Each structure stands twice: as C-alpha cells, then as structure tokens.
Length: 193
Image (cartoon, rainbow, N blue to C red; front, top):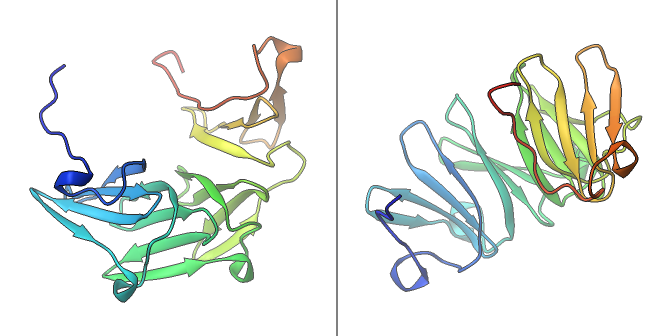
C-alpha cells in the first residue's frame, strides 16, 4: 500500500503515542493518546481540553457506535461517553468494577462490553453499568470479539482466551489446550468464523 497522509506531533497530533482510533458516522477520525483526545475533520484538528469536559487523560481505547456516540476508555478515569458535545463519565460509583479500561466492544444486542484491567468485564446497557459473570477468568480482558453465532471471545493478559456462548457455556483456552502462551494480546474473526 501507499501512505496517503502522515500526521505527527509537529503537524497536529498532541502526543506521539496514539493508543486508539475510531471513525464516527460523519467520517470524523477520533484519536486517543496518552495525553488526551483529538478529532480530525478533513484537514483540521480539534483538540479537546478541560474546558470541553475532558482534559489531558490517558486514553486506552475508543469505540464509535451506530448512534453517533463516541465511547472513550481511559486509564484511571473510567469510561467516558461523548455525544451532542457533552462528556459523561462512568466510574465505580456508576457500576464500573474498575476505572482502568483496556478494551471496548459494541455487542450485537446494543450493549457495550467494557474490559477493565483489574475489575474484569462490565456491560453497559440503557445507561447502567454492571459487572459481568465472574465464573470465567476475565480479570483482564484485552480484546473482545463476538462471532457470527453470538459467542463472545476474550483475549486476556494472563489467562489465555475465554469464550462465552449465548447459552452461557464458558470455555477457557490456555497453554493446557495448546495455546503457545497464556498472554493473548488480541483476537480476530476470519472468513471461516
């Protein structure tokens, strides 16, 4: 492929460590960094500040949903919802099990799955966050995927890969089942399902 554009700190990006990207319904590119949030509209940048409702925070993940909401996972500040020019924070007092959010996934049921570094998996539905089943080893989900059959798959920092079928059946895949390591950084679905 060919690089069509390159953005660095010298020409607009606020921090050299970009941690997350997503594209919203208006084709704006949202950029999360270890030093805050930016949005690119065509050739111009909008850098969000404390005056906008979000300051220089460490953003770990982003998700743009089908309603135009931008979901922002952070280290230390929990989950943030951006919609209609407003930032709304979700923290422990709002039902999150931890404020270090490492992964986000919009599921097929309209919910948002939130993987936290120390508090396991959370689900946000209808504005309310709650912890997910603790039966599975989901203390540290790094990546989340839902396959064509509705099974949820999670890669974890130290417990391999976990799947939860729509029936609730849980499977754990670790080195004992043939994984080369119990540290799984990511997960993806191929054409075979």
